[in-house]
Image (cartoon, rainbow, N blue to C red):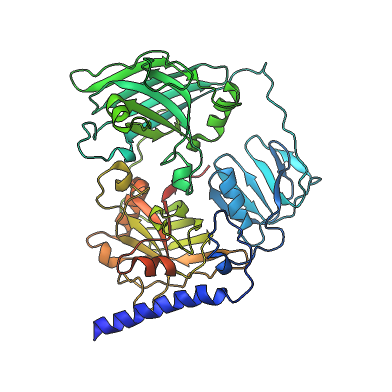
Length: 503
């Protein structure tokens, strides 16, 4: 019957996975090229080609190679992520890194390559040389630089305990940070009830996925204090709070304005260096609020009541762009920086190091195109989708960081019976892993999933994606993740969809 046929096909999938892992153990075990790979999985990881372990060199501060060669890919991410992309992209020899954006290039760059000044970008190139480069410290007599940041504060994911009286705490912080030590903030909180005893900017440290390494879910020490309670026995890190935080008014709102920040010298980094690092890497910092309730519940550990990533404040008045009418032809560009699904932390997972990057052009006239570069996995990629978040009981599980939901667009995948099917066929198979340990599916075509878009047209779906990208996630499924979670379905690696607005 049908049940017996499904069971047979599932068994075949398990057998295929076993063959991938078991057969690999008969060959010489290559060295894993990614961090933290389990020894039991190393045999299934392709040997890195010569030069993969090459060091990265700086051509010169704000210097871009005159001859960069062929443009291979444009991506959004931090410097280390861009280096990873290039290391796993066939033919990539250098990157032009421009803050939060990078351009992968195919031309050979050497220390003697001609370069041009560029105020926004710097060329980094792969080299077997390990000669150290020296970067001069900034001149202390330079004029101070100031920048403004915002942080939307939501309940800390860790505060999901029964009886939490502040489960609805949320708010907003706005900061101005200057390299000469002037640091000010204004804070508004709603939904809290107990004293606000500490507010900080924290720096992310450690973490084993993109989300836990950056401000979405990371942890790390405070680097700037704002308002708080200096009473002995509470939260102290060697720098006093400049003032106490304001209490709640009759509307359960606390507003503390123009608080002077104090630098927390927990390492050898100077105040100016710290502020410059916040300027350069805001996604590695978050604003954290501790209340008396969160303090006493978690004591002696410290966990904030609510928190939010730092975001550069945009200049100029906000503008409203009317949504395009569904009948208009319009294209949107998106990207997704993917990391291992947090649920995939189970012993022996052969895809435990999976991460990657995907970019898309999605048009209301039905043209749906994308490319995905996945690396760190070992088993066959059997499905890639865009999902829309559904349900969730916290800000994180309601949005793309940790949400779940049905696929609304299919990209590459395996249409074999018994695997992941949503009623809409995949238009092509996902690329196999190459000798670089990466799967690069180029020019993959997307398909609108009619079964999960009932009552919604393609144009309406894309407009919703453009207006609410935080509610969409790109998900890649592997054979290992499929067999481990069957009959449930959990992606191997995933990342929030981000709307690309150009630069």
